[in-house]
Amino acid sequence: MSEELREYLPILLPLVTLQVVLLITALNHLFRHPNVRVGSKGLWIFIIIFLNIVGPVLYFLLGKGEE
Image (cartoon, rainbow, N blue to C red; front, side, top):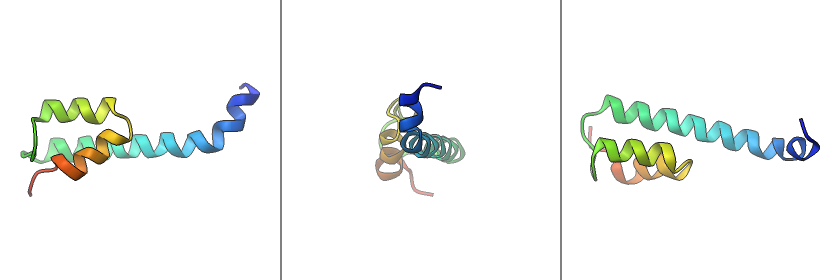
């Protein structure tokens, strides 16, 4: 492991962990619930996966359908 990577590891590790947890939680919720408030499920899958931390947060704020 390079010295630069070791220097940034304490910052990167929590961010990567946060991203993975948000990604799994948002996709799990999306697949278990039939309704989304805005857009389609396909669009939300794309947003959740490709917009990193912002995508899952947007899903929970804007796209999460009513129970």
